[in-house]
Length: 239
Image (cartoon, rainbow, N blue to C red; front, side):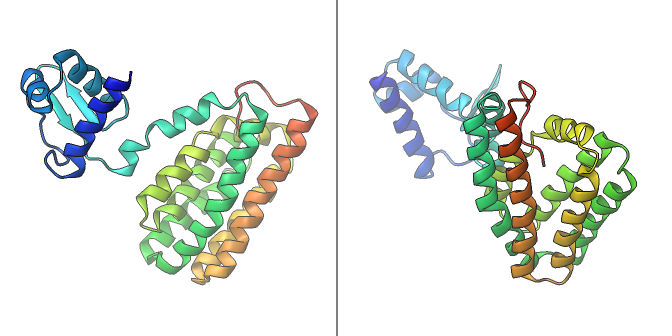
């Protein structure tokens, strides 16, 4: 295992130094192994591991390429990891806590950077949420899209990918919450309207406060609900 780790690090170093830039094709396996002073088996295992990590992409019949190395690609596995944590109450609390640390700051940043076009997109989803207040599934779909549009306005792809991974896959739980809490739609709309108003005013402090209230409300609901032991298996935090 140690030898494989070293082989992985050697290939990573080629990528870091620009010898293998994003989108470039790796040499054939025998050539790569010889260049790195590795056995073909070690080179193959290192390539497999880096492909799983989305650093490399193996194209059958064509060869192996360095991916774009964009955050959305490299952090792609985060959402899957979160899915695996959904049955762990303590892990869910931790995830919502991370969201509480990141999303208000992201909203404040978005307020200083959002364009008129991006603001219009946020409003489209807010309007759709109002129209869908009696259709829980549509309401929650536009809820998720609303948050994505807000964080997208920061222009920070890493931040967007992190928050998507943490909260982008909680749709089922948000639906479940809406079905069991008759007042969820009204509260959710009010919280989102406050966020939109802050963005419209380009007020970073107000945006941060509105987002903090929204995520804290979610966190409080989750802590109380997990305490009852009634959360359905496999469901994550509500939004």
